[in-house]
Amino acid sequence: MEKIVSLCKRRGFIFQSSEIYGGLNGFWDYGPMGVELKRNLKDFWWRRVVHEREDMVGMDGAIIMNRAVWKASGHEETFSDPMVDCKTCKARHRADQLPKKDGVPYCPNCGGRDLTEPRAFNLMLKSYAGPLETDENLVYLRPETAQAMFVQFKNILETSRKKLPFGIAQIGKAFRNEINPRNYTFRSREFEQMEIEYFCRAEDGLALTDYWLEERLKFYEDIGIPRSKIKIHDIPDGERAFYSKKTYDLEYEFPFGVSELEGVAYRTDYDLSAHIKHSGKPLEYFDDEKKEKFVPHVVEPSAGVDRTALALICEAFDEEEVADEKGNKEVRTVLRLHPRMAPVKCGIFPLLKNKPALVEKAKAIAASLRPHMMVFYDEAGAIGRRYRRQDEIGTPFCVTVDFDTIGENGPEKVDTVTLRHRDSMEQERIPISELRARLEAAIF
Ligand code: ATP
Image (cartoon, rainbow, N blue to C red; front, side, top):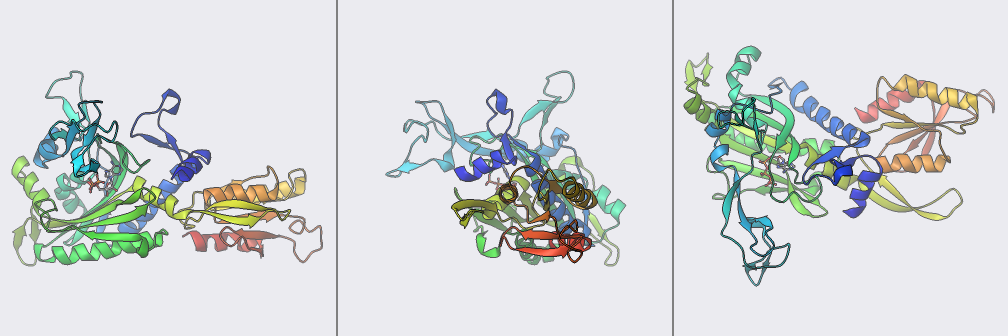
């Protein structure tokens, strides 16, 4: 994991938030490469679950909602982890995650066994909306994006004129005052979620939960995380939330252990019913054909952007021994990201930076591709070094403009370039006119 953390910092994927002031536990910033990776992930998720489907629409809700929402959803009352304090070193830990020696839990910080009884610790971050810090002005930063999709159910149903089954999708920030933020970005206090609420008739709920599990597995495969790497945990009776009739956790084998990427939960009609009860507003669905009115059930595939981005990086990270230009062995660090997830799609280099004709041509190619994809122009250092830099950020293709391109070695190869493939390091000669189509086919 240290190698991955170091690469992420060195190459501009992830930085500690407020780093120059010592950071802030549980908060992270994404640098130039990280933000591209996350955008590619979110855009592809949106394309798959909204644009490519007739039965889905999107929304973008506010992070801060009326506190009544969190009373109705049960979060104010129950969204908590059982906590214990170590009486020796005063550290606070989740009771269910304490290490044990001979069956006795101990403090992972100082090893002390003198712990308080577990107490509920609410995970919602608080703030105040308005000038006075009074109880009426108390608000929470949302701990999940889901609730906006429930409380806007009626507005969305009426304006989109969808019929059951249909779903709402949302991507956005969520906040949880996690006790022990850890495992890099895996457990943060500020993170992003990609959530779907798929509304249906009660009789279809279980089958649709299996359907969405399959859809989500396909999604992970299409971004470069094979099925064989995802463990499906069918949460047994008694361990699920009391309202859920089926929940699958999709887990990935991170270097720090197998941990949850996404949950696919059949939540029955719990959420809409709770909001009907607390708001007094009708959130029922009316089936025109059957002349029936009822509260829809819902299946919720809820994924984390940050956890998926981290899984993508872990899955892609590789080191291999290769020979450099002089035949010396060296270790090549390469991120084998799926081309559609890679932050930069193509590196573009003139063979030499002091030959204006090469530089001009390479810059022209970069400019022609820029409206269509993220490219990176680089003229600094030996060509091998430039390839390695792109390998480390996962750039699937590199293009080099050489003397053949500008016709110095005869007319046959004029306006062709070498296209170098990241994984195989193979190079081929292709006409500049075919470049865009070749790259687009791989990254779409
Ligand atoms: P965990 O058991 O790991 O705390 P959870 O079951 O509470 O997670 P959910 O409430 O199901 O998580 O949230 C849905 C998704 O949101 C998770 O699968 C995860 O991808 C993401 N997520 C939840 N909490 C965090 C966090 N603290 N940091 C980063 N991502 C998170």
